[in-house]
Amino acid sequence: MRHIVITGTSSGIGYATVKYLIDRGFYVFGCVRTEKDAAELRKAYPQQFSPLVFDLIDEEGIRTSVKEVEQHLDGQPLFGLVNNAAAVVSGPIAHVSKEDMFYQFEVNTFGPLNLCQAYFPLLRGGEGQKPGRIVNVTSLSGEIAMPFLGPYSASKRALMSMNHTLRREFYPYGVDVIEVVPGRVKTGIIEKLNKVESQYAGSDFEEPMQRRMETAMEMREFGLEPEVISGAIHTALTVKNPKYRYVKPDLYFKGYRLPTMLPQRMIDRILGKQMRLLPSFLRSK
Amino acid sequence: MKHILITGVSSGIGYTSAKYFIEKGFHVFGSVRKEADAQRLKTELGDSITPLLFDVVDEPAIAKAVEVAKAKLEPGENIAGLIANAGIHIPGPILHLSRDDMRNQFEVNVFGALSVIQAFVPLMRQTDSQKPGRVIHVSSTSAAIPLPYSSLYAATKSAMHSLCDTLRRELMLYEIDVIDIYVGPVKNDMVSKVSIYAERYKDTDYYHSITARLENALKNTIPKGLTEREVAKVLHDTLEKAKPKHRFAINKDWFNTWFLPNILPIRFLDKVLAKKLQLRPEDFAANKTKEKSTSSVGQS
Image 1 (cartoon, one colour):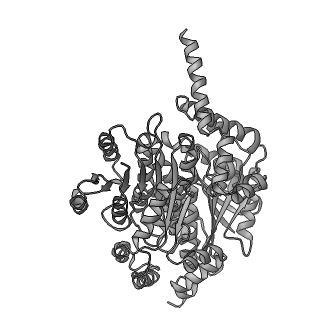
Image 2 (cartoon, rainbow over the protein chains, first blue to last red):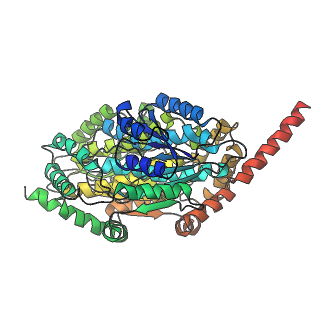
Image 3 (tube, each protein chain N blue to C red):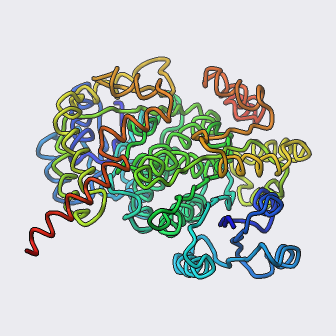
């Protein structure tokens, strides 16, 4: 049996991917923060799913989870590690606190790196065993930085960079590292954003921020089904010669090609107009 | 009087830039961590520099420095440029670096840089007589080409790449421009600092490869590097230019260290690097057998 460890399985891409992989015969360890988050999956798939309960900030918890998996594997190598879990910290970058920045990177960057380190011995396997693969789920935001998603975009960009160095440093061990880059996905991430808005009331960015939330809410029905990303993760884990990364934009041309191709200063102005970030908006106040 | 703030001016690019900007008639606020460095700068560079005593990770000290700078500015003056230069490099194979290494690396290069920018933005706003200031981030070509054993450093520069985009887009509201400059290899003493670290990984599989990377840097990359003064000139020109590019790379050995790695297919580049840095499975296997034979000799 092929075993996969995947983080952030309580909802969204993680949840969909657990089902996707189980349907294709994998055994899945799903990382969640509380026992409750795993109850449903555990009930649905008693034979092919076990939860690992830890927080990505908790190094000790990560180490304990490795021991659990090692015991279960009983000498078999780990087929794959999927770093999917992420948090979203948003806000005007001129006002985001250092604590928020730390939290964002602890979850989205340091956590996944720590997991790569901790699970490395299991992925590498023993003599004569085929080494496993790592799949890091980043985001198109790392490629195209949208206003008010500064901390999130930066943490994902850092993970994109790490994907290259991990792949190059793990190469002699045969452990491949592949990136999956989703565009907008229909998950609950937008609802998570809404809470922060009030924090920045009174700043010059209040109105642009509101504007941004409105467009985000209008767009919430648009986006990829999480299963599309699950498919990309499955491909990355199983094909013989995987690409180094799989980009899955929600809108290929408008959401990916155009913004990465056009002069960035032009994108700045388009976004500035859309989100009321042009200097004239402040002057007219 | 035109004022500029440069972080990390005790040595390297920061120091040379401070000198260069003073030659061009600027008044420089320069951040240093130690009182002794502050005194030294005063004696070496005179009245045109106002050392600000803060570590970029120390938010209260940054806030104090803002007050010092504010007191120094005449009415109607602002800070025309902020050069986010201070940075550290924690090298090593990622397998053997700790979570605290990650935290330290990011706290200085990313969160610290951001704290300084956030704190000084109010002093950079447009005044009746002066244009809004500009932020210039001193990045590295490793933001585009992340190399083994510089993983955390490269990741911080990538994070800053993204943050520079966000800052540029959001600070458009204040007409404060943000420019990200990828600086290629520089001829300086960085290497002597990092060469000590190789010994730390003596007992890991990566030791031979790390040594190869360092030797390669010493022999090929660094001698062909930019001088600090060349970098300082670019920083100055970028600040003075009417319409600077939002991001660009400066490089001496442009073809080999920039063009080629950016144009090659990634999986192919991986193989080239692996060969050059002895990071192939066969290299590790060969090292193993070599070590085994030497240790058996030792036993007999």
